Image (cartoon, rainbow, N blue to C red):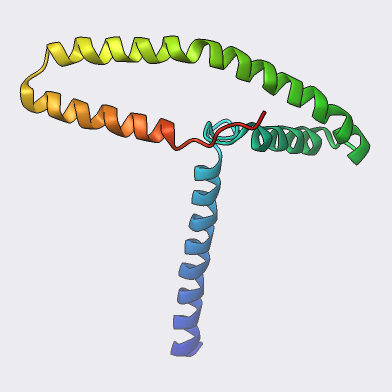
Length: 132
């Protein structure tokens, strides 16, 4: 085997490893560990994900997938209504927790806590609004 072939083979192995890693990271960032859609997806994107996943896992025909789509959409609407009802309470609870923590830490730590809370609020605000 010539030196050029050896170098080309090693380069190919490294390239394929990098490609496999990139594909794995894409999958990791797109879905959480259970394969669920990430929270920041809109309702329509969640419905698409769920219908596609059920169709693939159950090997559904296109007409079957079309039949289950309204059921999944109705379920997502129910979930959205429940979530909208309790979200303000959850935010208030978070605010109380952060306030209680803030009272028990040093001023330098309070500044870091304020920055952390700002990041959390910014992250929540960037989620797409669900369509009706």
